[in-house]
Amino acid sequence: EAQVTQNPRYLITVTGKKLTVTCSQNMNHEYMSWYRQDPGLGLRQIYYSMNVEVTDKGDVPEGYKVSRKEKRNFPLILESPSPNQTSLYFCASSPWTSGETQYFGPGTRLLVL
Amino acid sequence: GENVEQHPSTLSVQEGDSAVIKCTYSDSASNYFPWYKQELGKRPQLIIDIRSNVGEKKDQRIAVTLNKTAKHFSLHITETQPEDSAVYFCASRGAGSYQLTFGKGTKLSVIP
Image 1 (cartoon, one colour):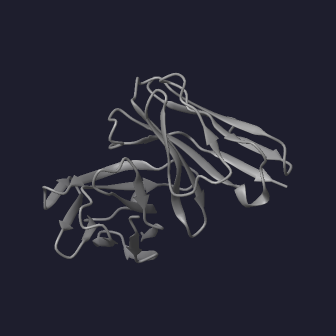
Image 2: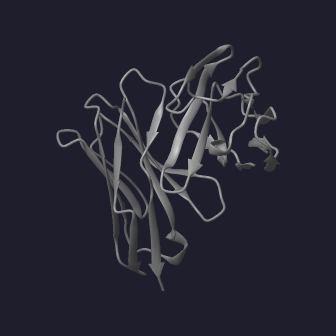
Image 3: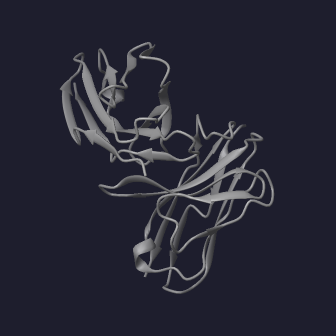
């Protein structure tokens, strides 16, 4: 089944404890992206990648890191999480390097205490 | 950077009526405009999109119109059904950009 998967789906952590949220797609998509969703603010793009080893900042990249060493994986790293990073995170992928027609993963709900 | 304003933030319609959601964008060179539907507790799903070289696109009960002069685009849902109840997000992509900028969403409630 063609899909975008994220792990974990739910995570509670404490301030400063490094964490990684994994994202994987099995559709051979070129483009992958991370968004955060907060009430009243909609979806905001954190980072995106047009291809392997090519990444760029979105609108809210501060406090996050990403890497794209393989086409199928695009992990989101929080080196030192803070409470303002409590949010719902979505990974998405697209068959086009332009980012059109994005398919979203199921989401990861993160709580930073 | 690109800025997208979406209105209204909430919309209630009677089943069978039409619903219209409007978005305005700031970058006159923006060239791609998707609409996503997000049901409660689910992921956003693309329902329709339009490119800047097209003025209107339809898919069954949904349609999107684009007015490049006024820099706005709208989602039209006809013959609304209870299963249309969801949050709808518009987005735009600036020229030469690989980034989507989303509106803040419209919560649509269809009353049976």
